[in-house]
Image 1 (tube, rainbow, N blue to C red):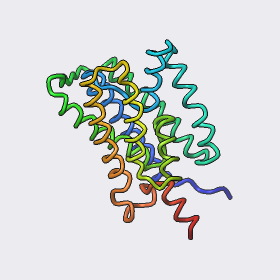
Image 2: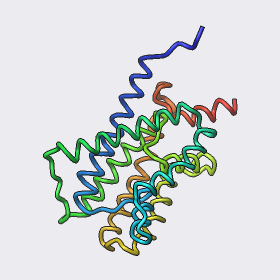
Image 3: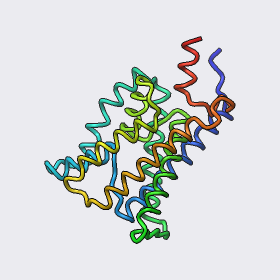
Length: 221
């Protein structure tokens, strides 16, 4: 007989992936985009390629994601890739909905510290929830996760280092003030991701534990 599917755990996982990606999409559009905050990670690199070499960002994103996806197939397994593809599609759909149908406008350009705080907290929770249930929202998230597992660094610390590096380079073309507050948002997001991924991990139900942490513990047993 085949392995029985735990539909309750599966439903909870899908729900958490949807909640995490919705929070990310909402934050990126209503807080980051509408208030001029920049982007780190692969998005920031794609925008840098557009500025310096006139490379199309969509193509650059695909080229950056492909090698990470291939590596993740061997290092993380098909379930992780399936969760990541689902999360990426959900994020794109939610972002499109926010862009097309949401009447809400959060104009915080006169209070960029508040925009950075909200961006950091909400993106940290959203990304942390997706990572906690065994997925990622893009190639940079997957790369951060794999580096964290193999280096021993906290996942949030890896996010901070990668995003800060990209944003530092992006000062070539980005406004200084917005970049500084974006770095502030990245620092807050990194700490929030670590907290979200690890909060209650020892006492959490199996469906909510961080899959890669469980795998490592099993391998050591």
